[in-house]
Structure formats: C-alpha cells, structure tokens
Length: 72
Image (cartoon, rainbow, N blue to C red; front, side):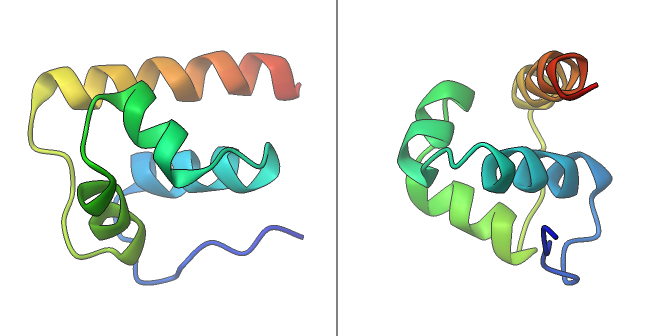
C-alpha cells in the first residue's frame, strides 16, 4: 500500500505523491516535468508549501488527470 505523508494538506499534492510513488518517478524527473526546482518539489512533498502559481497547479492537474486515466 502506498503511504502518503499525512502532513500534506493539499489534495493535489497528495495525489501527485501517490502517482510518483506508484510509478517510481524520481523527484528530479517529476520536478523537471512540473517545471519547478527539486528543493521546491521536496517542500511540496514535506507539506511545507503548496503550489501558488496557476501554471504549476494546471500542470500538476494535467499529470493527475493523465495518470488517473491510466490507473483505471
């Protein structure tokens, strides 16, 4: 079973972390795909911050949508 950090309050980031864990996507690769720095990715993962940019949220939503489609 996939364990997502319970400190994460943002549902978008929880789903992103589930996808990253399930598909074994490295933090470096996922940060690159999203267009953020690796340290920012880790801050998301630790629940220290959430995406504020609409562009970043849109990219994450598209990733979630694509992988949810593939998971079903």
